[in-house]
Length: 230
Image (cartoon, rainbow, N blue to C red):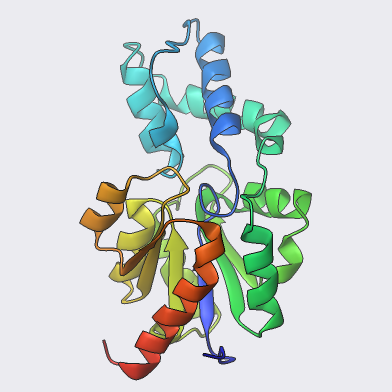
């Protein structure tokens, strides 16, 4: 099918467009050292990519019996902005997906729990920002990071009809945030959420590889156009 001008894709950033785990985990290890802890390298921190920062920092610190969440958040921001955000390569084939959608007239947006200014910097670093019509992210202090509100803001501010929109993300927050706004959601399996997590969240479909994403997007819009009042 051909895309329509009203078709709109909302992308998560971390784990969907960019491979951000290493930069995030390195920043967490650095803040732990700043707080006087030796990071436990046996712990798999892949899960930290996606949730709001305050939530994940609280969980990480609990392992060390530490409750200095606000101080840790400030340290994280320092390390991430100076080093971590530069460790965010684009997943193979995702640039092609974004360029193709843009060329075919699809409106593109980013909805991320990452602070808006950092997300914009990462898109600039990867020469992707020019393809997006807008970006919804957390505030600089990491407040306002919940996906339902971020997606709602994009729909409202850019006059996007929910039946014309499709959210794409790798974590349950992306799926539940979309569904809270009655928007379809594709779960992607190359990121940091498991198949089980995305199925449990109710993803409308799952995509295994970026090379399969364009066809999956076309299928979702075809289904939405056929059943506009889902």
